[in-house]
Image (cartoon, rainbow, N blue to C red; front, side):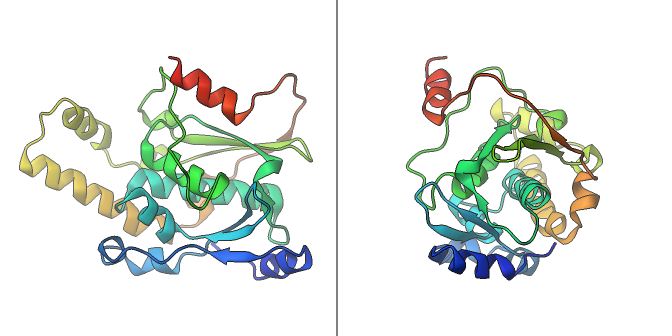
Amino acid sequence: MYSSPRRFVLASALGVILLVGLPLKQAVSDDLPQVVKDHPPIHVIHPDGVARSISLARVLDHHGYPCGPATVGFLALQYGLDLLFGEDEIARANDLLVLSHAPMGGVTDALDLVLVSEKPEARTPRPAGMEHAVESFRIQLLRKSTMQTVTVALDPQLWPEDWFELRTLRRAGEMTPELEARRQSLQDEMVETLPAKSFETLFGTPDINVVMTWGGITSEEARSAAQQQ
């Protein structure tokens, strides 16, 4: 997983200031494995025109704790951006339409931090009807300037076997201390192991397609639709 320094040069050539994410809160950074701290960041130009470097550690800090789904969301987005923009170009958030099928808050927090703002005012609301399942953990990216699209999904075999069962028990208030310890160990395992794997191991080699579109939806329209459900 390689982040090209040429992206920094491009940002300077565009006359854009590249800002590094805020320092980690001590409580979160103490728990982060070295593989997370060493993982290369995503370089993106936010809608405010400022290029920023958003690290996986920064995402987990924003989310509040080391989180498996937040890690998956960050890595999937990073891979998708690499596929659509290559190593010589910084992605512009305004050049993207991103669709997430994953309803978990960790994925949403990762996408909000990378695509919306370094300090999101609120989490993007989730519409009703999204399913918590292995098949749901995929994101689709459309680059508007080229009309290229790619879908990135984690290999189902990499999900812990009892992940969703434990989640169901937790939401039902049926967790025991032993089960909670097991859930936390799975979180830690995902955070520690997934960033060390290659994108191809995590997500395979998705096809890049060129599409035609009709209609459109703004972020405000999507938020309104979710809030009215």
